[in-house]
Length: 459
Image (cartoon, rainbow, N blue to C red; front, side):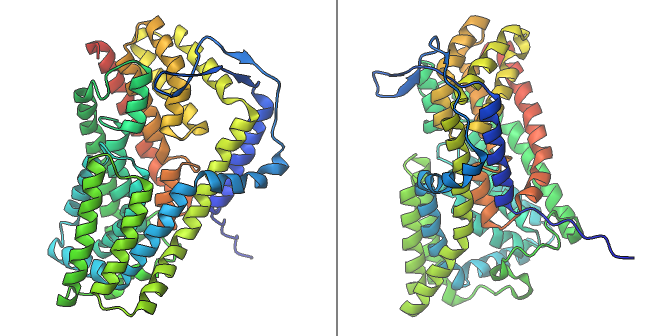
């Protein structure tokens, strides 16, 4: 008898292409509509919540989806260029073997307590991402992958240490200027007011996230076949754990260089001044100076830089493809119609459940608009008056926006954060989704409970 052919895992680009086709289909099914845009005194483009009207249908031909790739790449240019620069810089740093030596030394020191390293890194990035933008930290996925390999875990754990730790700090929105700041400005609230409750919200989210990742990590270490990426060649040859190098004296100068730039990036991030351009530039300096400190030949430095940049090329392409989905939705003119109809639903929901339902609405909207500041500009001028009408505080409405915009980013195949981190580890999106979807369900439950509590205490 012929053996049944094993089902091939769809490439992440295949999944994105399917979503692009789905977006095209929605432009035929959802009536086109629009709100009028006005410019505020501060120069922000805002929606007039009373101006919704239906417009002429403008469906997008599915056969034209490939024409959205180049514009998508252009729209994602700042992220892509930062990733290529960071990949090149990290390529040089990796070829010095200093990072691998550090990871190997730590793994031997904590043998039997590897979970402590995972939890510590997750807490650290949760704190770092309280005031900082999230996409700037995508290049750190490589550092997580090195550490995870040395500890005996898989690539999913390596990505999760950085990505999911940071997701909590970012998504609760205690001091995030682009998302929370934009939403509170539109809601006419003082910037970062209500921070105390948002910081409190981080605690249950972070606890369950650490437990979820650590349990998975220990399960994989005990039985590698339990890994969601078991048997898949991820092309991470440089992270081969069969020969983990020792940390040697020659690595000390390189380590000083790397530590200096990592601390500098964290410092700039905490100040809220670390953007993609600065992040990419600092990684280039870090890589070149690491190579010089390691006494690498200039040709070797250049080869390592190009090799590292190549490693980020596929990730960059996936982000560019993903941006094409938003362009399709915008061309079809259906985004405002979706927001208008979702907002009307709140009138029929019991008061205690209104904030959780608004949270769920933002999850739906985030599928179409993954940009936090963009989503705030579209939805908050509509959601704030709705919140006023149904008796919900504006602070709670902003919190529902934070949760919906933030946590949803880590399950979407077209979100820059997801594709950036997952792409850095060459993890098929289908396997990442199988890992993350249960945690996302837990996040939703916790978010709904915290929003109900916010309603009860009059937050």
